[in-house]
Picture 1: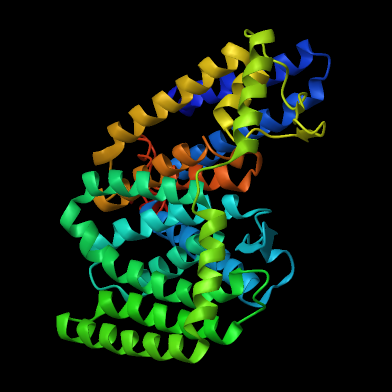
Picture 2 (picture 1 turned 135 degrees about the vertical axis):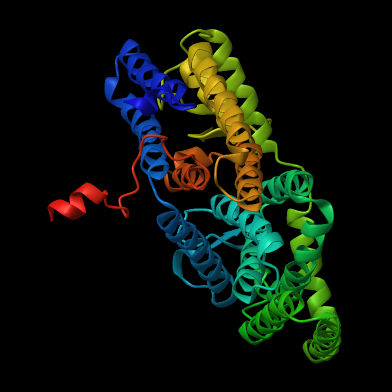
Length: 407
């Protein structure tokens, strides 16, 4: 009951109630269950995390990082070995998707946790496990070839620089970034669908990349210089052995497809959603009740279920009422995160969580990541790491003296 007054719980519960009511107004009450349950799930995560003692929060932190590393590893395996549902092919390019249905969803999970791990590295110095985790997460992020993920990483990274200190962040980021670049260079030949699988180069690049990422963080200046020199030599030999032309062709194909801001489907879907919103601005078209359709010059048509912008989609479906409640939830969450900066969590952990949530918010403007519940629930769990303990909550590990005497 006490949590009902804490930000952003009131706005989230209001959004859940409105989703149910809005669906009922459109004659399909069952359609409001999914958004309502998601909002309630986020509130439940907050309620549980708020009562976790420090030891349990460390377990939660380790679990989040380990889960993200597994996501990165399965995505990399999907591209390097073309395994099952762990990879995604479009426009002649293979991209990492892990088990999260599509690459952009995988990217935002990895970006959020990458920022968290980099923030922790500013506090924990030469931590080899954290350095390896950061390198692996950046490799997985790069393997998704997600433009929205890259933009979100840059936005969150800039905020992390401001919150945790530019020099500290740059110092711990160099190793994982260089290591990820080396590993991805070995993965590029496997990304081009026409180039065939090149697992040997992918594995060699991965080993070299992890060695660099971990070595630069855990070794002194001389050891780091030796690691980089050896890696550069191995890289030159690998390029010569693989063939500069083949590597350049694969890189050019991948860059030509992904290094562009052109995305006609996103723009058209957003335009159609805004047109539908204009028809019913107050209550929208109802949660999950709209399909976005538009025609092309050649007479063909396109129909999609999701707009690549969660803010636009929610506004079109739930109207101004829903948009207002969402804005209230985001604003109160931001206010709460700022208020909790000295609430008990270490400053680097707080900075990493804030940077990760910023990246999530930015990415949500380019993809439908709220429709995969694991993603917003993981974001809620990140926030849970810095939630303050209730002032009246007793520590269960301390037994009152009177109880000991009675026993």
